[in-house]
Amino acid sequence: EDQVTQSPEALRLQEGESSSLNCSYTVSGLRGLFWYRQDPGKGPEFLFTLYSAGEEKEKERLKATLTKKESFLHITAPKPEDSATYLCAARHRGGSNYKLTFGKGTLLTVNP
Amino acid sequence: GAVVSQHPSRVICKSGTSVKIECRSLDFQATTMFWYRQFPKKSLMLMATSNEGSKATYEQGVEKDKFLINHASLTLSTLTVTSAHPEDSSFYICSAGDTYNEQFFGPGTRLTVL
View 1 (cartoon, each protein chain N blue to C red):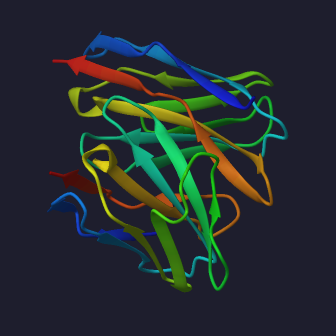
View 2: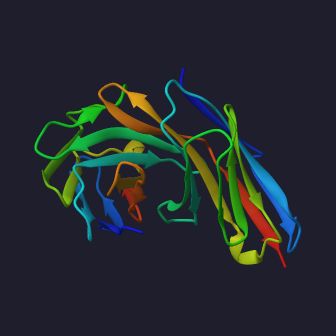
């Protein structure tokens, strides 16, 4: 069964305290690992797509990495405005289409 | 990034009525759009894949007669929740891809069925 698991479910950090979020996946025929940020009552906002093991992408304080079994979202010196739910999703074959299977997300709270 | 809009953002309806939600890609053409449902503190669950000019592909357990999807053009897909009941109350989100590599989401529609 195609599965995406994120940990931890919730994470509280002090401003400036770096950490990492984990996303492990078990899907057949991965065609991209996606990271999104979701604020309450809003749709997910695209952050990164990774395609192959060893690939890394950065955007401001965020860096995403990918291995054959998992992906990490590293947050360096976070600020309160980084507080949100971070979702990862694996794109894979589902019938005749490619589709995204999402993890449950990590709720990140950054305290000033 | 590409912009996807949804309308309405919130809707409250009585049990037994039907509700239509629109999803538009504003600055690109999308041959494929996706409809998701998200319950509180839960992940996004794919409901169906909408292909322009053809029938939607529904995920297992999603009733196609209850959740009607129409993808009439390359910029518009609609989801109609027919004979809505309180258990259909949820956050409905659509997405569209402008290339094979990215998928952009709308802001979501909060449906409350009384």
